[in-house]
Length: 173
Image 1 (cartoon, rainbow, N blue to C red):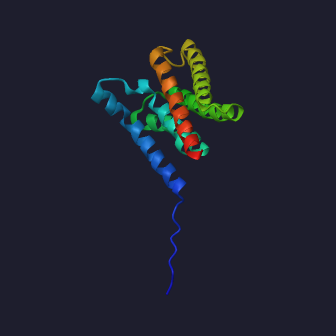
Image 2 (cartoon, rainbow, N blue to C red; image 1 turned 90 degrees about the vertical axis):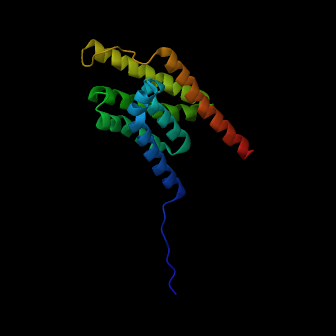
């Protein structure tokens, strides 16, 4: 009798693949959700939400992949935002990931690591965007998402990682 061995994907790879497909689906549905709820869902920063979830629930490598692919995917499926803004968002998200992991090596508080990484990546985004608007490479307002919503999302996303990390630490004790 011959024993057949199935070489299945490791659980973590399956988890990452499912997460990535759900992230792409979420970004795909943003325009429809905006019309359905009569609210610009992009105000809630769905790409950053997916990025933060990737950081917390998948791998570092996958977080970089999400930061790189979500803006490009959005451009391809909806032709929005423009190529220049897509590049700017991609740079911001990649910087966010790098800063988070860099800061996390220096300080153990995940809330502050996420908070500072989002804050610094946003500051970089706006500095570059000001330059692009002032040189007429892109048009429109420098700030399109109200600042108060960005501040709320900054605390919500940083708080999520803090509470998730706290619950993991309690389980380990």
